[in-house]
Length: 349
Image 1: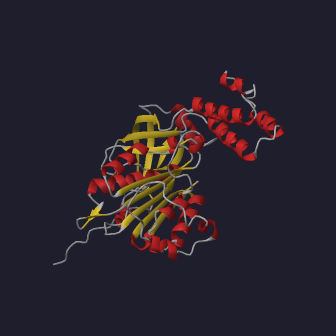
Image 2: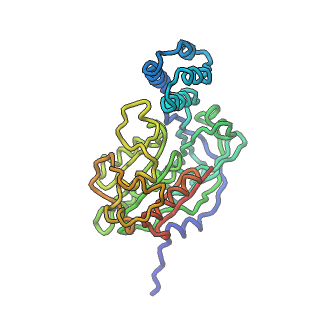
């Protein structure tokens, strides 16, 4: 007799109907932190070491609008190094950043919305639509979103300023073709920057929920490389750290380019595509034909003590983030030998 064939995740995704439905906001909470006191202390420390603290900095501590440009001019006139000035500029940018700048939002839709892990929907709030990846497993009753404040952005600004529990929104979807491959003996590598990790949160939750983290009784190594500037910019960081503690075969590798300016962060600090090289199998890395921009990181040593290594010929790779950065991540994956048909990726912005 004919046995009905189980639809793959990709086939299911293409067959899911587009639904337009209303929902109610059930949670709005910041995922980042207000760190202005620590930032000012870090700036003052650098100024003390450079030229002695300029009196102008007292203005910002007293709540006045601060003229950073005047400070930079003073530092240049005093002969302070470009590197030191650049550090202060980066800290000043963080000081001026609105808080919150990273939101977790949950929506209870009136009718259940079926989607495949990795897909996105269009969320319309305050009469403005915007596409957002779903950050929760499809088995949950509510939808979860991870939203970054975009300077001058229409919907994101409205969401940050006006959204409250109880607000009504419209959801349309699902859309998107970047979904999980069927369970296999291959390991999984997720590479993301910023809120690009949202669809991977959905996928990883689902993988553990369904037992897809093992195959034929053997664990699959699951890697998540997540790049951000500051530690509190890491979306869902506590959930990923919990998975890391609970499962020996899950490896959360955050890499933070700016955090060392503020704390004694001792994790990875390079870009995601560079950090990937540090966790590759030695033979694969030696055989990789790296472009000049990556070749300089061939000898990069891992900051995390992880016994496992990545075999480029035995992985599924997923990449997501700002479109320009995703292109860089995918180029790096190709360079280390990950086959094109083993990669899925999606960009935004």
